[in-house]
Image 1 (cartoon, one colour):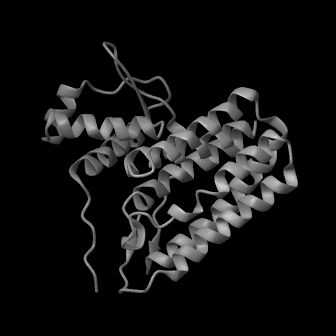
Image 2 (cartoon, rainbow, N blue to C red):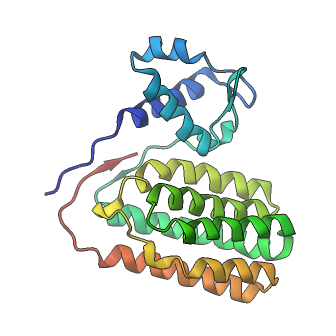
Image 3 (tube, rainbow, N blue to C red):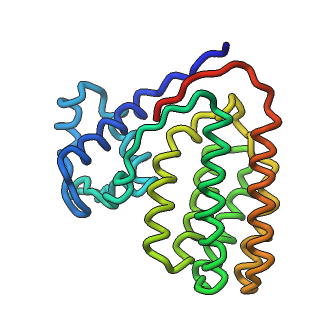
Length: 236
């Protein structure tokens, strides 16, 4: 058996804020309590609150407006609230890949038809950030997330975009915690990204889709190749 990674305090705080938003029925544009009030409610430091809010803002749960307050940004991000009990990480990750392959594959296909020049420029910009900061995992993780998010937006399908982003937020708290104990499990899959971006720019649907499936094949293979070191039950 191996040790189960403990959640950091700001991750627990972030989940408490999400639960508050859900239970209160807050919608886009609704204002959250002031940081000082959240500090009193949760009994944690301002630093932990700010870290939690930054992570929630990165996932589009909230929007922080300096001098004005904290507002709900995208309530759809938590509408897909579910509880899943999975006996081992590999099973969870392979099943997540199956869902991602279906949904993001469609987004890639639609992006070849609808992506704007600005969205294509952003894709290449995020890829440059990954290349220029390849040793800084915090930067590359955010840039990679933004790259894929731009593809979802470029699909032009708001329903599909909302579903993918909601599920992405749901899986985020697991994927961000060094799955299978590997900090850089999917590092070797980066070369597929520029090819996908260029295929979208060239409106080459066949190449974009085939390269995306090669990317997913590589991700699943990386998961399967990690030696089994014991099982743990995941409850998300």
